[in-house]
Length: 360
Figure (cartoon, helix red, strand yellow):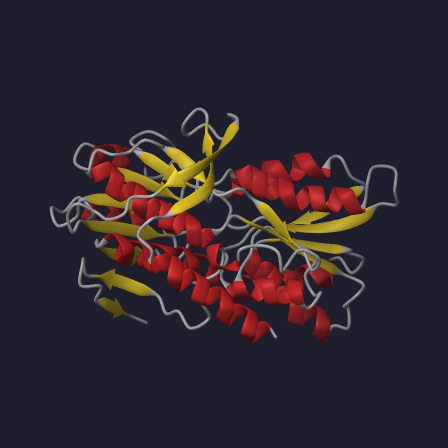
């Protein structure tokens, strides 16, 4: 059943990728780059084709989990549809600011017409972004970033992602109900999205009877998250909820099963991945907000084309956030959130011909 459902969704995505007339339901910020400003629902009419075979320099924090693989898939699909090319460089993790700075400097090369930046740090690249912006457009993708030098941004407010997870718990445990204990795994300390997701989660949780009794920061690699979950369960055996990043939620499922804690400790993810989705379908993970990373990848790529062609009209937009639960899991557009299971990361794509170089 799961395989049939995913296959049908993949076919829909492939058909969409071949279509010329694309329109997406998005939310645009009324004040660009101000996530606290009101969001306006829009029907975004994407370009049919790029006017030239532009080439883009794309930077990711890492490709360690399915989230950024789904962003990559969205960019590949959109680049093929529009007839442009790119090269991808990944920093290897959020602690690697120096490496991403070096990669960003390489994007200044004349072979690239614009930069698409998934940053490892909110403000750590600002000075270099401002230098690059004098030469070519810089499009922020997914992770929030200091707006200085940024031409456009394809993302969602990460505070709202945290708030969505917090509201889910608040609905289950309203103020005045018995206290429940939460272990909180926000992600890498200092990453561009973590402070925002923390703020949103804490604000929403304040309206509940849930109490955060432990906070553990860490890179979103699976090995790191396994260690954090194991250490937390050893130190706090009376935990009721493990709440945090997708890799944490993925890691927690087999750990709880091995410790015979299924039913005693529950899992909530702050974003969706393939493994998280499977966990939701099987009732192992209670909820996961989705920010449609495939669609964010497509939007960032399309914005880059608009920017180099002088056609940029919407400077700050992203998909609406929805919460996936066992009850709602069949009702959201899976093709906007998850790459097909067979997809392999594409690090270099030639314009127009659509020739891809897949690297491990």
